[in-house]
Length: 426
Image (cartoon, rainbow, N blue to C red):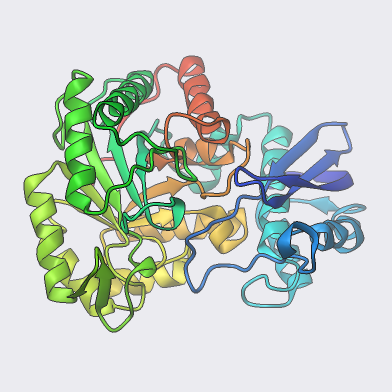
C-alpha cells in the first residue's frame, strides 16, 4: 500500500570513504522530524556498464571530490523532493532518473542517486513503522533469511599491492547453525590465517576490504593458506562446512577475446577452464565470481555448462545489477547466480528489479559491498529482507566491513526465529 511520505528538508555532505576518497552522505528530514540518512559506496574494480559516479576533477583530492554532487543535491534534487507527497520508492527513483536525463546517471551521478534512494528507502520504512529489512521483504514479497557471510580474508587484484591477480579469496561458514556462529567461524579463521602468515614470514598489510595481502602470486598458494587456516581454527574445509569462495575479477587480467595474462603467463579460455576445474576439484570452492572478462560470453557459457551443477557461477561485471542484463544472461545460460550492488544500478528500485529478475530465473543472488565503503549498513537489511541467503562485506575486520556484519548480528538477536543459511535452490 502506498505511503504518504513528506520530506521537509534535504541535506548533503562530502565525507570520506574507507580508502580516504570523498563520497556523498545524504540526510532526508521528514515532516515528523525523523532523519533518514545514507552514504554512497564506490568500487575500484568496476564493470563497463555500471551507473556512473560524478566527481569534481581539478586539484582537490586528486580530482575525486564530490563538492559538485553536494551542490546538485542541494540545488536540484532537494527542491524537487520537498513540498510534495511520495507514495513509493519507485516514485522517488523515477524523479531521480528524470532529473538525471541519461541512461547511466552520468548527469546527477550515481553517487547522488544511490545515496538519496537508500535514504528514501529508510524513510519509507520509518513511515511504515517497520525495520528496513521488513520493509524490503514486503516490497519484494520475499521470506526474510539471515545470510551466509563470505569473508574476504585474502586480497589481490585491484584491491591489494601484491602479485596475486585473483582479487578475492573468501571463507564462507555454510555449515554454521546461526549467523552468530558464522561470524565466530570467520573471525577465528581470520585470526588463524594471520598466525599462519606470520609463521611463514608472509604477514604484510591488508587490502581495501580488510583481507591480508601477502606477497604471493599463484591462486593455489592462496587456497592452500585458506585450507590450512580453516583447519588451524578447528573447522572442516568443505562445501558443507567452512567453504571457500573466489572472485578472480577477470576484467583485471583478461580481454573479451578470451586472453588472460597473470603470473607471467598468457592463458587462453580453454586453459582457464581447465584451471578453474582443477581448483574446484582440489579445494572446497563453492562459489566462483567473475571467472572471465565480462565480454567473453563464450567462456561464461562454457564454465556454467561444465561446473554449474556443483558450483555457483556468479556474474558481477557481467550484469552490473541490471535486470535487463540478468534476463539476457539467463537466456544464454551464462551463470547460475548474480551479484547485487545497489550503486551499480543507482537506485533501490533498480536493485529490486535485479533481485526480481534473479528470482524469475531461479538464480542465486549474493548481496555485496564495494571496496570503497562507509559505515552505512543498508545492504545488511537488504540481504535479510530479500532472503537471498548470502552476502559479502569483506574481512571480519575494519569498521566499515564489520558494521554490516554487526547489523546482521543485531537483526538475529532481535529476531532469533529467522532462518540462517543459503536459500534453497529451486
